[in-house]
Image (cartoon, rainbow, N blue to C red; front, side, top):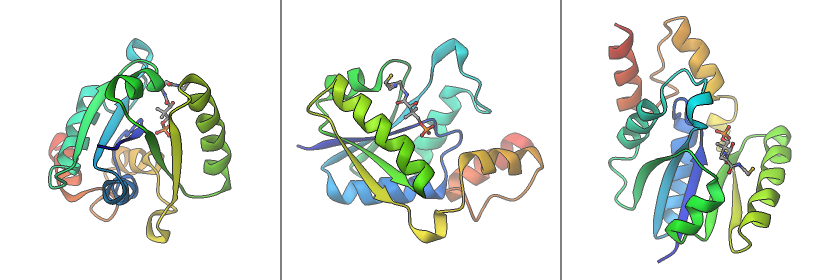
Length: 159
Ligand code: PNS
């Protein structure tokens, strides 16, 4: 059984993230969408548990995908779960430069852990969680950018 982890802040999970998760689910037997939080210092718009709830909602129809929350080192979680890969989407050169560094640090912490970078699908390459948060602040409709259940949940929370 080959397990991969899709790690991130997921504040909140977007259609771009979900696209990467779906593609990872075709490549690996089991995929864990891992919401990472730096505990007390977490300054996200959504509380880590809420981010996890939204991630669970987004992947509920994908049979080999689950979601979890972790406040420690990603490499420790991966080792604990016996994961062989981290899967991340890259939208542009800036993402690549960052993910390249993260891949290096994670591999130096757990040498069996490979990072697989998937190029973002063009329809999602201009969107980010930062933009989603900005749109939420201004009460904009997010149906085109967030998984449908997630957009609906956020709308309910705003009302
Ligand atoms: O959504 P993001 O900003 O791309 O996610 C970055 C994230 C959460 C994947 C990264 O910051 C991370 O892995 N944090 C967990 C702590 C860790 O293992 N850091 C790397 C080694 S110091």
